[in-house]
Length: 384
Ligand SMILES: Cc1ncc(COP(=O)(O)O)c(C=O)c1O
Image 1: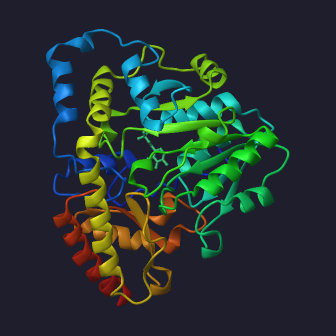
Image 2 (image 1 turned 120 degrees about the horizontal axis):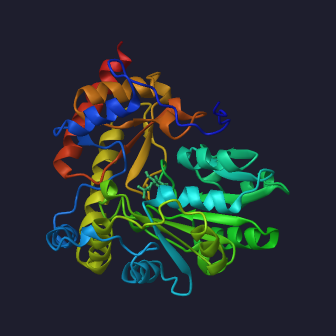
């Protein structure tokens, strides 16, 4: 018998005509005309720096060997440089997801609880629920807290069993980011209470400003790093976790994939970091410009607003509550027009009906199609 998990399970509504969520996603994946705004992925890389290195790795048939189990030193050093955390320890993993699971596994004892923001990235809550007694999901869908988990909210909600605080920065799905003052305050709370801050910086390069928790709380933080978003490498499944030597050593004792992370993905990741200054501005500027185009369209509709504008991520949430339209119905309508978005319940059970999440690291011409179809969708569904 499998024990059912109490918290944070991703709501996986299986659309009509499919046997499983996997079948549904495979169907979407195979539709080459689909505009991909549902996974915060990045479809803007035009230069071939990353691609060429991976092709070279294939050509040389280096993939016949196993890579070093904890990752190539070159890649580890490049990530630490990128984070400006040269004195930290690091483990290469098959994505931020892997790192999040390992972090929860290594830190938590059965009596602990984990504090997370709601809305948030529910896979994290799900992992936490496997190892902790409780996941305290703090409602942050309101302007008083600035749509983010604040040090004040944390102090009000944590207790003596709190062991991990999850800071997603910028936050999926709302795109809120932390100020240096907030980061310092969180670091103080963590060090005084012997708690770990999991700083998930998956979207850091899209943010206007970004501050590292590890600088202020090196012994009480774990930084989660991903190549899926700014590097546009989601399908390659590669990321890392960065912390102090004690944490990383403990994690090494529990890793599942003892034979290392995909060698082609590591070659791409090394190339991505080495070439970052050559493409970063283009990706970030195009993403921000797309966000402006979406905002101009949203501003023409009554009763609809962008929850946090500008978003510091490459995604944002559009609040549609006042229209009376259901967010799943809206996502389905758009899917029918070959636009993949996410209804809010993918990132919040409590607030999910209120918003649609869209990501916009996509070509501008696709944003223009989205804008046209979104206007039509609101009109059609409101009049139903
Ligand atoms: C906050 C957050 N962390 C981690 C991930 C997953 O990262 P990866 O693809 O590196 O596993 C996502 C993906 O959407 C995310 O939103």
